[in-house]
Structure formats: C-alpha cells, structure tokens
Length: 190
Image 1 (cartoon, helix red, strand yellow):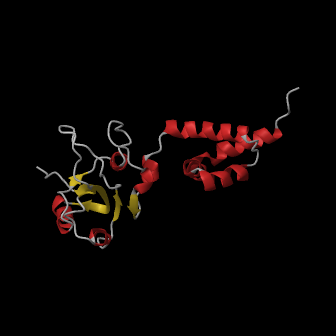
Image 2: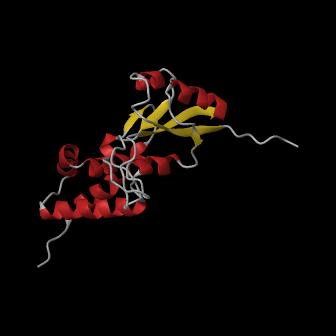
C-alpha cells in the first residue's frame, strides 16, 4: 500500500506581532519564497464575547515545489507564529485577508495586502460578474463624458480607477476599443 503524500505547495499561518521577532518579515524574505501578508487584523471581534481579538496577520506562503508540514513548521517556529495549515484555495485565503466574502466581519482594505514574489492577489478579487459590471460602468462613463478614443479612457483609468485600468490591461481592452470605435463611426440618427 502506497503512503499518502501530505506535502503541498501552499501553506498559511497566523503571526501575532507582539510575539514575533521584530525582523519577522526579513526572516521570511530570507526563505526566498513567494508570500503574501494580510492587513493587520486589529478589528476582529470574538463572536462569543464581542471583545477584540489579539491583533494578527494571516500569511500565505507559496513554494515552487511541495513541502511537508515539518519543513514549513521550521519556518513558523523561527517566526514564533502558529502551526502551519495547508491551503486548499489561495484565492479564497487572499479574499479572507480582507473578509471579502464575510460581510458580517470587519472589512479590511485590499490595498493593504502585501505581496512578495509571484502571487496574483488582484486575480483573487476578479469575478466574471464584477468584470461585466465594470465594463458596463466604463461604457457609461464614456457615454457621460463624450469619450470616443481608447487613449482617453486608458489615461483616465491609469490616473483615477485602478480596477478599470487592471481590466483594460488584462482582458477588456478589446471590447472597450470596439465600443469606442463603433461610437466614433456610427451614423447619427435623424
């Protein structure tokens, strides 16, 4: 009978600043792995008592190859952090960093997530519904502001709307370009 492989690439743990070494982030960087750190969770409430929980960070570590519990625990011990947990969904954990899918909990700012290495934080917050809603918003903005050139929309987004800018860079430039081209060339109705 073959032994089950319990190693995995993605792990998480909780770090309490009050018990971690002052240079905990530098120690983690020395591991030469991709990792992401949640905003400081200093507004979480204990459901039973209503008291604030101890301030903490949620941390996601992503290795290039599979690592065992013992290998990851050696890292968390150096940081005086909690024992590591396997991560089934890195996107789900990243969304939990700000309680995106838990409206009953305090909502932290997505911009306060720190990323070191190759972890797609922005992708964790994209859904097809939000993408389509954002395209509708861009179309309305173009109509309301008489924008007919893609560069005008692109420049506006680069300065004023990160979500739209990211969509234009990733996968929505074609549809918005076609929309604006059609606006420029449509024959006015009489």
